[in-house]
Image (tube, rainbow, N blue to C red):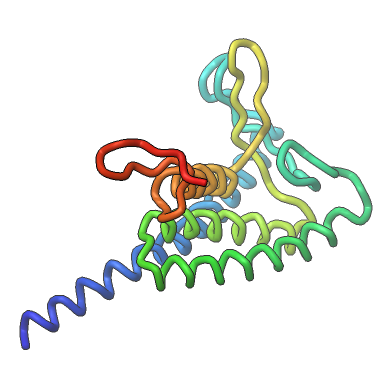
Length: 183
């Protein structure tokens, strides 16, 4: 009886970890944006952290990644509707991963869901997404982004790895010690 209870608790904890990842990614994203917005008010929107490499730069992106469709009058409504559909799809996909015991996929989707909700909150409250992390690589500025964008990026990379290498129908799946290309 005692062993069964311990197994149940362990299973419950394992199942709650991806949900915790979702909540933590949203909380960290919103908290970091709040902190930066307060710092922005003091430093006029730009703070050098590491000279010629890393800056905190306040922007509100009214578009998608790399400011795609920014400034279009209809884009915010479009992104809000698209985000709702995407979240529903991600949740159904998460249930699929849960039922098939794809742990890697559950964590990937947890990051994607958390990042999507973090940016969606901004879209609802501000009609745009607060971005503030800015890097310069070899003298070239990279797109300004936020923590939710980082969660989305890592989650999508994990999804790609899952479907290329880990899924039963993966493109590159090792079988019998040999890597094979599936059709």
